[in-house]
Length: 328
Image 1 (cartoon, rainbow, N blue to C red):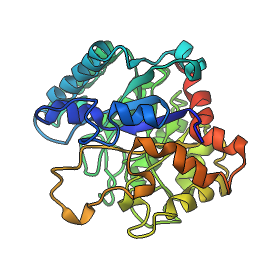
Image 2: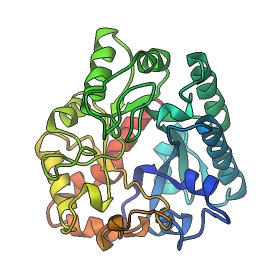
Image 3: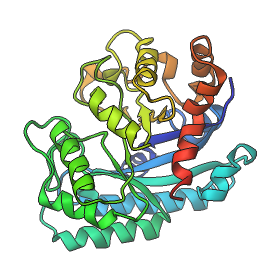
Image 4: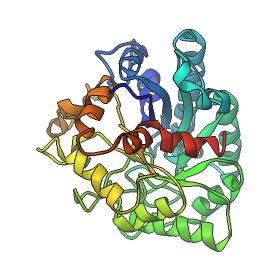
């Protein structure tokens, strides 16, 4: 089944910025290389600017934004910047539409920078990329903005509140995919208490009811994203699906629909450079069913026995198309 695909998270930019001799068309290096995206009929790909909580995080983010510009310039025959026009007619376009996001607000301000530097850096990243569609305040660990997935008892900090206040009304979503539960709760409370205008998403997260992992969403938080008409991108990483059973990815999707997410579920595959990853227990990172971006058509075929065509279309692209149209 060759439906157009919108994917809400990949890490091609950190690969391009960090790996010697990296190239966006090296299918042997990264599962979201351009030839694989083309083969999978991916029409829109969100490219994350990912940084660690470490000295040099702001410089790393800027370098990745520059790689994004390079990608649009040097591979113009293959890719283009997503705008509303592209999104509305993407099935007629031969190119892959790209758009940028921030994964971990450490890329906006390291632990020692004044908070005003975060605002300046966000404007700098927007200038370099044309658009930032979402921001996650944290990654796995704690930073100045709040607690990440693998932290306990750390919620939304004052600097996190200031980032939320700054992006309100800017058509930039906040991403819950790497928050601690306490941070997710704090984000939602701050948005509601202060009547902020911020879309809420989970760009690459699965269902904790199906696989108990801190990276996955509780039903409560998934339903908050659904209630707010956001999107939830199903993550393809084995660690967040099930250690052994590749079919569990289908259970995550069916559960998401069961709790009311038919109009919100999408794909957030989370493809990144894995070759030098030190923890060998994580290998292989992806099941063969969804091991790279070329697998979307065959995976949709697998799902076609369980979901009607209208739901498959929503999952593949229509939910994202609906969501992104509202603020492009």
